[in-house]
Image 1 (cartoon, chains in turn purple, red):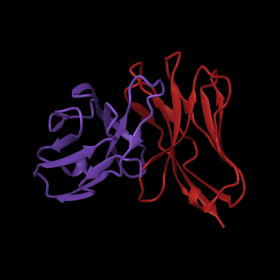
Image 2 (tube, chains in turn brown, orange):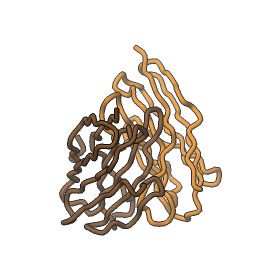
Image 3 (cartoon, chains in turn yellow, purple):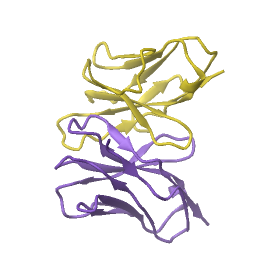
Image 4 (cartoon, helix red, strand yellow):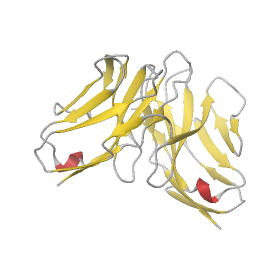
Length: 115
Length: 115
């Protein structure tokens, strides 16, 4: 257990519905990252925060995706009007800036299935 | 675009033997870190080892070591005395650009350790 938690662990939804995932990072970490992982692939970057500021977003993050980290602690990732192509594992990671290596510690992920 | 390539989709090794997983990467940065992550079946991603690019000495963590060839942009992982618990997907990762914000992952190598 890395200390990063994600909820829910599994989510099944129907196409067109909205879903929201939560990530609680390691408490002293100021950076929080979201990745998406599909079967047989490595994680792909979606977005990251330093404290409450969203510093970078991937082109993968369409307008249907939004992420927040309102108080610089936990973060939420919302997907609106889900599509079958959104089915994937959504991974959250946290880290600390200024420590040189920018290591990232991953949570267990939320597996989304869109039917 | 920066890339990370793992050319071995699957590998197997006998328990107690040594195995080497390959990784090549492409970055324009002068100083950076490289990482190997392990993802056991249905479990979360764990950081195995990291290498700082400007250090000539190869990193070592217990049974895990790297062979870092900066000029060739090669970063292989050697696992000595393989154990059944080493069975997992292994991902190589490098930073995407100068922000050290997000990581680019390879597609992974599925390692099976056989008794």
